[in-house]
Image (cartoon, rainbow, N blue to C red; front, top):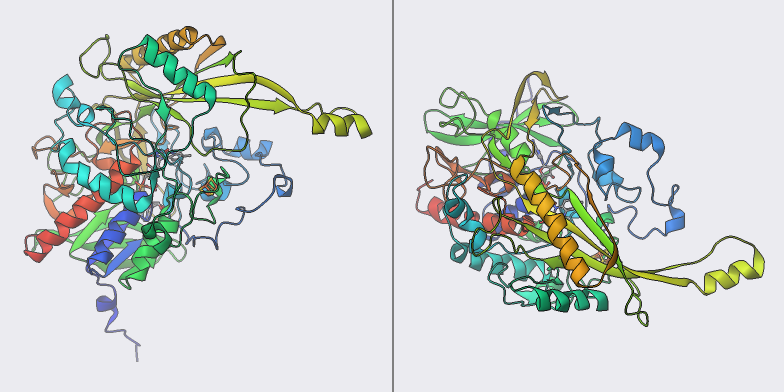
Length: 570
Ligand SMILES: Cc1cc2nc3c(=O)[nH]c(=O)nc-3n(C[C@H](O)[C@H](O)[C@H](O)COP(=O)(O)OP(=O)(O)OC[C@H]3O[C@@H](n4cnc5c(N)ncnc54)[C@H](O)[C@@H]3O)c2cc1C
Ligand code: SF4
């Protein structure tokens, strides 16, 4: 007699399903479980438990076989991922290797991914700046993409909500283009960073150099201690996973918090294939999963579905969710799904030296840097390109020991390192314009190991990006020269898009279902019980790092989804 599990379907039915356990999925799950919903997170990668699964976190440099570097073979095998600065010996186990999950580059695109519980939240650089109305009003004002369906005041309380929980350090700088948040004490700027800040203030109206706002606990509050997190020790080894929970990750923060409610089920090794659409009910009924190891197909059911697989994978899942009602992908009535993808332009850098402050040096580490908010085309259009760029800025003074020789000479050299010059450096963070011609689509023939079509990426720079890059180099050179920096060298790496790791769009928000996929609540216009709150939903990219905004949108959308569900309007 067959041994049938008649409760199986019931056991696979939840109040809500979240796809992906990274930054946005962790927030969706936290908010859903706190509201009492039995929530299933489907994560394609392996489990990574906070503190338990950080194998390199306490290793000393000499304990690494290659002293932290990649081998030549690893670089040869991974031309894409080895271009990411964080893909090094201590953190390489958290990155997708080039051969593991192939994709089709119609144009070169460095797709940087972390497939595990926690996603890229383990690896990110933790820069967390709010967007302002100069960002949300940008497309309408400058006439590109479509108008954002919200303004800053609607998202501001949700920024506060996520900042207090995550722990963001920063100063209240009082800048309209970079709204202040709920900050823990800021990290300190070095004396040359402070000097540059003063020089810039002296020489320019409306240009500012501030300390970055970063997701590090500089002064633990009761809410952080309740999460089991402690003060950041400024080790700057964050990408290994932090034993103190000093920086925000899903693993240290939102996921254990959601688990504590008793309402969370986490299923790792679950590759989401597609969303199941119920033609009779006119809404999604669940999710089709392929078990990553056994390749078994399993279905899970829920009346609320959040897609948080990171921007491009969210596009892939929706494009692959085919039904009679939606033959071109779920919610894709207007044919725009996968289109208007944009990213950040991180191509240019500039460096120099400063001859002053010889009585000072830097000591220890700081997992953060200086930040220059966008100053181009903010109040009015002033250049021949649209939008602008923010920039990182850091200044430090290193020391050097002569390690040649033996015995006493060597010991003496090591004990008395020579101080070098002050080095200053900046990198560009440019906004790109979402265009229909920058898109992702499913490859018609190539499939992955789980039978899912591979993603084809067709995303490139345009003339606007070239002009903006040249302007960054010209303006920063001028700012460096005015501050008396010398040996100024600039570089446009011409790197392919992707290394910024801020890809966005394809499932954009908007007011009009004819020109957008999601409404102002991150809800599919055409399938009301499916929500997208990761980068795929972004109408435009701003210049600020985006993850804080994904967190705020996730929390806000859950609040809306649960209230609609209570009113039986989903
Ligand atoms: C080195 C580095 C530095 C960065 N620095 C910053 C920074 O300073 N500030 C900032 O704002 N951002 C930064 N980022 C970007 C940031 O990490 C991402 O914006 C953020 O993680 C996106 O959150 P997410 O939830 O959309 O995706 P992720 O965190 O990537 O999580 C997505 C999850 O979905 C899972 N998934 C994907 N497909 C499927 C599927 N089919 N089925 C089931 N699960 C699936 C993945 O395995 C993953 O766990 C950085 C990233 C890197 C790598
Ligand atoms: S710098 Fe802070 S957050 Fe990063 S690893 Fe060290 S203690 Fe943890």
